Amino acid sequence: MSMILDYNPLTGEKVEIHYHHDTDGITIEHTQDCAALIDENQRIVIEADHSQQIKNDWIRYARVPYVVIEKWKREYNVDFFSPDEAEWKKVMALINSSDWSRGLKTTSIYHDR
Image 1 (cartoon, helix red, strand yellow):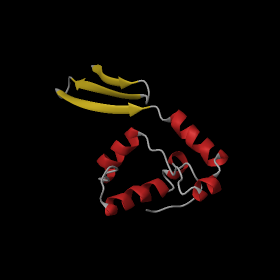
Image 2 (cartoon, one colour; image 1 turned 30 degrees about the vertical axis):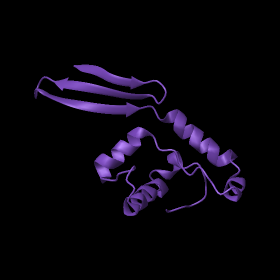
Image 3 (cartoon, one colour; image 1 turned 135 degrees about the vertical axis):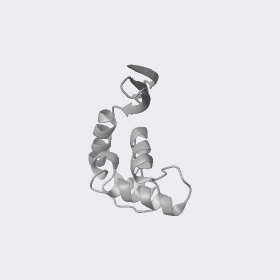
Image 4 (cartoon, helix red, strand yellow; image 1 turned 180 degrees about the horizontal axis):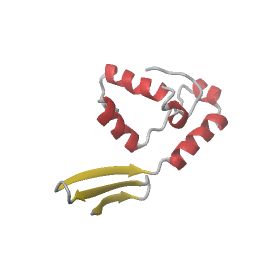
């Protein structure tokens, strides 16, 4: 048996609770349809004027969906929101990794801090 606990139409995030009769236990599942965000990120990489952004001393480097932030915390013990510089290096390593960069990065520029 499942029940939706929360749904955010702006981000597409959904939180569901699942009851398992066989174990008499529950699980809470967070999901988010990230397809549009990933497509937009890839479009930005192609179309953005990165040289102008750098000249203006700013650049949008990546957009990371909330479900990815939660996954990193759960599976890699990486805290996306930590102010600790060592933790931020872990975040940047994940963003720049071949597993994640194609969907998350919004630039072809490499940055590690």
